[in-house]
Image 1 (tube, rainbow, N blue to C red):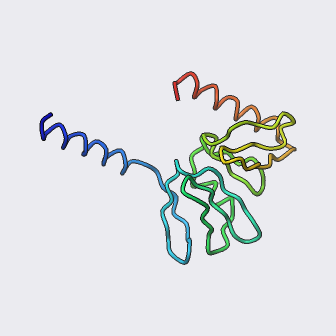
Image 2 (cartoon, rainbow, N blue to C red):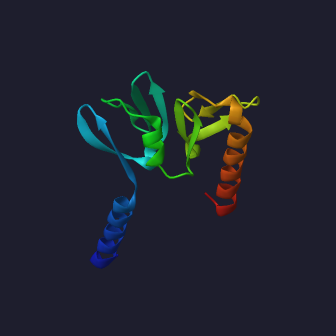
Length: 136
């Protein structure tokens, strides 16, 4: 193996890391970038939003509207499934048979807005089918 090959591999890895998308939120009084592909779901509780991630749960330190967070996220893989929840469909284990909630990879149940459950189900199933076809 040549030193140039190692340098090329490291440069490629750095470029991929820089290209990853972040969302910036006020956490602990500091504007904090949170890697989008590590976010499992957002949960509104009272006046704060909890961000469930691969490395734990973060909590905003200011009143944040879910609508503002939703606007900053790509859809797919993010889906607003309830007034209080936005999920990353990549971290859904399955959907309840009555379409009332998603079961996330961590075992959490995330509610589905019942008025639009059919639409949410179709969006989720289409996303899963697209990922299967593309090998994702």
